[in-house]
Length: 362
Image (cartoon, rainbow, N blue to C red; front, side, top):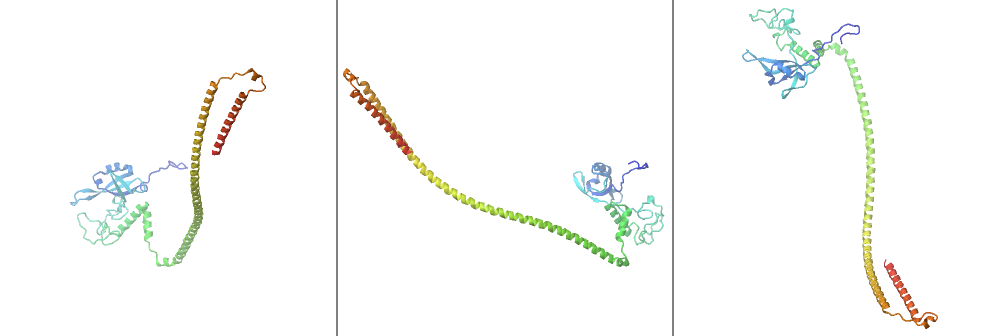
C-alpha cells in the first residue's frame, strides 16, 4: 500500500518489536563459533541475530563465552526446539535485564539519552570524583532503602522485572504491561469492598444461576441422548433374542431332518443290498438260459446238418405213370409234407417257450 483513498502518500514498514521474539539456547558447542557463523547456519530456522553471553575469568582479565546464546527470531513467538548440528536443543524465553541509566541510575532509559544530573550510586547524591570513594550512608535513588542503586534486591528492580516478563509473555508494549501489573497489585479500600458486596453477591448469584441452567440444559440433552441410545440398545437386544430363538428352532429342525436322513440312508442301504442280491440271482439265471440256448442252437445246427446229408444221400424214387395219373398225391409225398409241418410247429413252440421263460425270469 503506497497511498490512501484521498491520495495521501504512506509508507508501510515491518514492526520489528511485535513481529520478532527472543529465546535463550544452552549449547556448549556454540561457545567456539562466532556470532556470524551461528547466524548464517541457523538462518533457515528463522534466526536473524545472535549474541553470546560472556563471563569474566577468575583473574578478571579476559572474557570467555559460556555457551549460552541469545537468539532473535523473525516471528512473534520463538520455536520450542532448535536443531543445531546433530543435536536438538530446547529454547527458553529470554527476559532481558531492566534498562537502567548508569548516569542518574533511574530505569526506562540509558545514559546515552539521559538529560539529568549525574549522581552517585551508593549515596544517591551528586556524583563524586572517580578517585574518591563514597563514605556516606548507603541510600537507593529509586526506593530510598539501605542498598546501592544497582542492587537486585531493590523492589523497583523486581517490579521492572515483572513488567518485562508480562511484556515478553503477552507480546505487548511496556506501558500496557505496567498498567496490567499496577491493576493486579492494587488493593481495594474497605469502603469500596463493603459498598460493592451486595452487587458482587448478586452478580455471583446470577452467574451461579446461569451456570446452573447451562449445566441442567446440558444434562437434560445428555439424558435425552442416553435414553435414545438405551431404546436403540433394547431394540437390538430384542432382535438378537428373536434371532437366537429362530436359530435354536432351526437347529432342532436340522437335527430332526438329520436323524430322518440317517434312517432313510440305512433303509436305502438295506434295499440296495436286497436289489444287488436279486440282480446277482437274475444274472445267474440269464447265464444258465444263455447256456441252454447255445446248447439248443448247437443241437439244431447238428440236426440240420444230419438231415441235409440224408437228403443228399437219398436217391429219387422213380414215379410210376400209374401213380401220377391217380387222383391226389402219393402217400410218401404227403407224409414228407406232414413231417415238415410238424417240425416247423415244434420249432415255433420251443421258441415260444424260451421267450416265456425269459419274460418270467425278468
